[in-house]
Length: 425
Image (cartoon, rainbow, N blue to C red):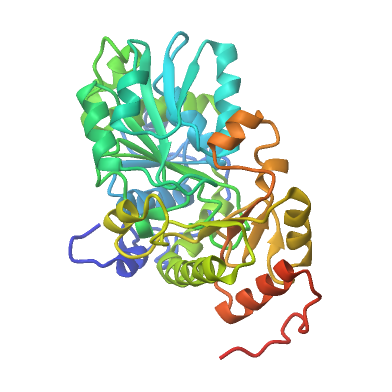
């Protein structure tokens, strides 16, 4: 991304060029399984990475490559690999570095699906050690000779704790380890972890990047700065000849290619459309979340509210320093009991009861019975999930309507207005 570009300009122009073949201002959907070349020699060169080009969409595709380039520019990485889902991104990002007998250190407050994945990896001899908060102090007690990766989220989902990326990156680099950061909740709008010292960023681009809830997809972005010590990361040794691209080269030529984790061209196209309005949507959603969280805090209708933008939040000062004045579009509340939480969710008129986040519409979820239903009570509590917790992904509706809707739902009364029935200022 050019230093002269501001965020919204970069969304439209960073890494985005007219289609070379047609001049189309948006790279078309190249809905093709394979690509023909003029000679057997040219195809052989592509397979041996000695010439550019496309051979098979499982490996890469022009529409997908365009999206990857735009995301790499946005994250300030040397390269990006788009995947079929956010979970595919996490799996490939971590497994690209570990082998049987290795350990991962992760935050206990990460997304429940990631905890499930790390549990699955135990069958392959890969162990995850959890710390309540990923801090230099906690890592000093957790890192062992078997540690190969430290994994955390910029903003925990759904605990909403904030990772001190520069401090953690400095510590893990001192121990010769890479930091992988899941930036799904923050998005590059709030934070670019690679700029702050992280080595690899993963995102579920199904969420805010897409913005319309119409595609499942993920992304891995590589800073290109980490020096992969051969003794600790022997599987990367053959790819060191690619210099800053070593991590991505190994990923593309091995695990990503062999597991078929590719993103479909159609979904890449939809993500590219969504990407262009990311800044505008996040600005509105963050402002709505701040207003809604502030209303919850003073309403007397909830037992607790969590949002990094509130001065009462434990990570507020860090969030203010790291995010520059906006704090994300997710809020959690506690309502006193599981039964009341279900009742509040069911009475909402505008918020949709779905497991996604990052849609333009407001979405609500009861985490304990859904995305944390496979976790132990202890693991759920460490992640900030209780029987009465409601997670809210705040959308871009008029804030007056959202506040009125949550007020009637929390008071347990039928709303006096229906969909479209309130005319806010």
